[in-house]
Image (cartoon, rainbow, N blue to C red; front, side, top):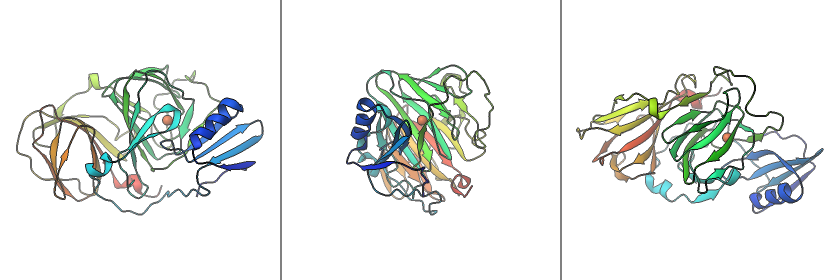
Length: 324
Ligand SMILES: [Fe+2]
């Protein structure tokens, strides 16, 4: 159960975004926290000593240690997910609708219009969070990581828990894949800190993790475990202290593929381009921008991959879901 400081007033509303806009644009309130970012149900705003809670439901439960259930999530499920208006003008599509019992969220995020992004210095109470740039570019700034920088298509960043950051600007048609654990987490606004910070500390420890930026244009490709594929390692295993492993794989020959099994680890795949047939609990088509979850100890393979087939692969180790 989330703990809240004392609020002076609680307002129940059908659409939190609309009421929030009224409080910030017309009444001069500022945001303290938002929960969750992809489809806000609770926002705390403040002005002077007055704190007001805008809430969609009367009670919010957060499962911090959800049961160890895993389930196969097919493209059929996530293709039905609607696009929802989330925080700071972003559109969110939920790629893991069942959230694996509250343990994971993977969002396909779009910002249709380019230009400045209405973001603010904020941080997230999470165990793990990464962002992969799918289309276009984005300009961001992170606490203790130097001046603002641009991430391009194929780049990836690990945002360690509670690092302050701000999205500044993006191209038209910007799209990203954001993956976090747990699924529901609070976003806090930090009004005290200004970014960029004057200090540079690239190796800083943020809750046992460190910031990491992967640049696609200098990545090395090597033969992958999937026959006929090569991969680049996004390099998040060490910065997360062994919680996850992220790769981008692409086809380079039509070799016959054997069955694979990720043992005790949970596997998420997002198709960056092309299509194929996933052989796992039956067969189904994977198309561009579709995603699947393959539970631990499940056999699978990818067949009939189209030319230029490319996939983002995230392996979640059991430690990510264990009690901290
Ligand atoms: Fe963020």
